[in-house]
Image (cartoon, rainbow, N blue to C red; front, side, top):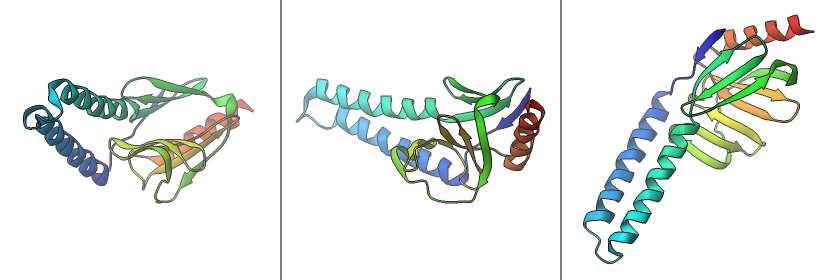
Length: 160
């Protein structure tokens, strides 16, 4: 089993730290300074903000594993397994902005759905890889995208 890490780029780290600090200040302000909405409303709004941050952390790609029969996209919480038999195409993508229909634009990565109906789990837009299967498209990032693509293509060629 081969392992490929998906580490966050400097811009993703900067955006994440900035948003976490701002959200922390907002939560602190709501809970301590704002008497207009009351403590219950403050707690509810704070829980919504914290739940959103936890959700995007959980969806962030941690590593990619090449197994015998599956390609595993391991997230911080959970994983997606893609059988090699379903992979139609794999390609390296150039640096670009990811237009999201919904998701996080930089907070713990670019996670969500893109305008081209691809599931995005990108931590570094300079090292993006697209995997097209029978049913879905995945846009991911890896520290070593060329090696990842070559290894997956080798597995696919030996399966034919």
